[in-house]
Length: 401
Ligand SMILES: Cc1cc2nc3c(=O)[nH]c(=O)nc-3n(C[C@H](O)[C@H](O)[C@H](O)COP(=O)(O)OP(=O)(O)OC[C@H]3O[C@@H](n4cnc5c(N)ncnc54)[C@H](O)[C@@H]3O)c2cc1C
Image 1 (cartoon, rainbow, N blue to C red):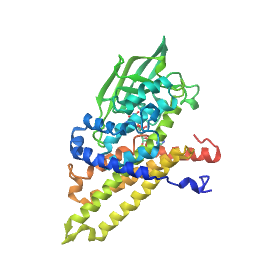
Image 2: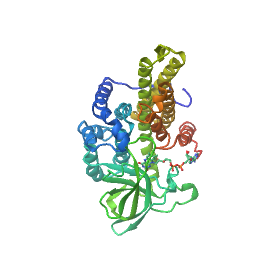
Image 3: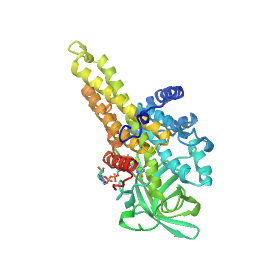
Image 4: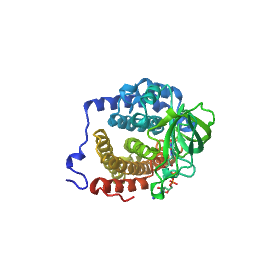
């Protein structure tokens, strides 16, 4: 036993030849199709729809969706490698695919067969886009504190509320929306009484409101979403009524691996750009790489990067094996990799000197991206609580909520 893990075998990372072939093809796609547009994406704060179409043609939008529903399967390592490789060039682009997972995961894990057949193939093919709407102006971390309500009416539900920070809302054809359907039975059970609904864009009363400008991952901006007497039929309820909190938490456990992958991609980019710059930029008649202070920065970046990558692949391997420790590992990978990416971006700026802070420069955008990574899919501080609670539950069967 490697306390608190049952065995040292839990630390294995499963890499296969096929994964590396896939990585190569994603890298080629990212460098050929996305890299030339990065400056425009940063400036316009939008991803060109033509680019999403090209990704869909490659099957990348179907990652995480079972083949039965038109996707590429649910192997977590493929999703991880896709997000890592694309984030090395443009992390914002991967938000589109990660949000698709936040919509499709609850549907294939908890939805009805009719819902799966109706929504997943269109999402997998990139014919339709989706968004995940949990956060509100008054409740982010505290999911159970949401105020959006869904009231039972004849043949369906009437949803009222305001969602905030909803990524991809401007492009979304479908939303998965969390609403309170009954009051919590007690203060300790605030998480009960929440339910997920599928809401289609054209439903009367749904409106995509203000665009929220965020410092990082420019290209994927969130919006507010207003639901004013939105009527949805009974068949749009996802999973059991009142069990939305559990579905949300399980969905985010998967999503966190995606954020760790974004962070590893960014740390990789910072490392490569710094090494390249230190070989080519000269000071005092020699390239920067000959100065010991610069050598320290570069080797520290590489060390941190590979440690983060190992944690990322380890958490993806545990998720693929459906191990109970997978959620804890995803939280650890998210904290560690996002902090590594932040440190790598700071080091990259240091070694690049003035160019490092030029706003149309090569590296400053990565530091801004890392600030978002540390917040969404559950802040890093909240991940620390998740890790502790999971460890106490799986190791001692004890709840410390
Ligand atoms: C760019 C971006 C995109 C997003 N996309 C989506 C999306 O598509 N869909 C969606 O539903 N949401 C989305 N979000 C929302 C995101 O999930 C929340 O911002 C995040 O969960 C934090 O919630 P909050 O902003 O309300 O912060 P708060 O919950 O108000 O937290 C503020 C601070 O208090 C700390 N804190 C809160 N509670 C505790 C506690 N119990 N113990 C210790 N510290 C605590 C937090 O760690 C944080 O530091 C997005 C956010 C951003 C920035």
